Image (cartoon, rainbow, N blue to C red):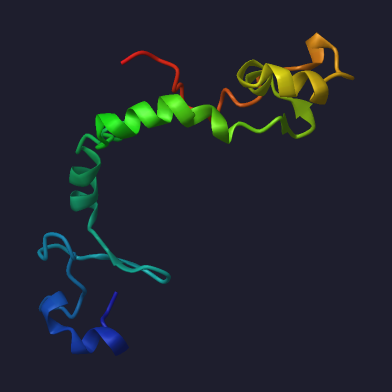
Length: 124
């Protein structure tokens, strides 16, 4: 793509053929996108895709905070999710849940928060 408008003032990103250079290597021609502007060339994209990305983020918290999460983690539990009574809530607060879930059968009370809550009950 030939540089025009905005790019004419940014000579450092253009090569001799008036094409926009790659913002990463500044050697090859960049890929121009209407929404995002200049993107890295295919060579740089392939090289960046080879970089291993950690699948799990590292948690930098103190032992104090971890203990607090284990101790007070159940305080964020909600009794229902989308109209279904929560088994986690029933296990955390048995006295309160007896009153709240009196009209439900045991088979209707399900583990509804398992997909979003971390396991704070695990050992150190």
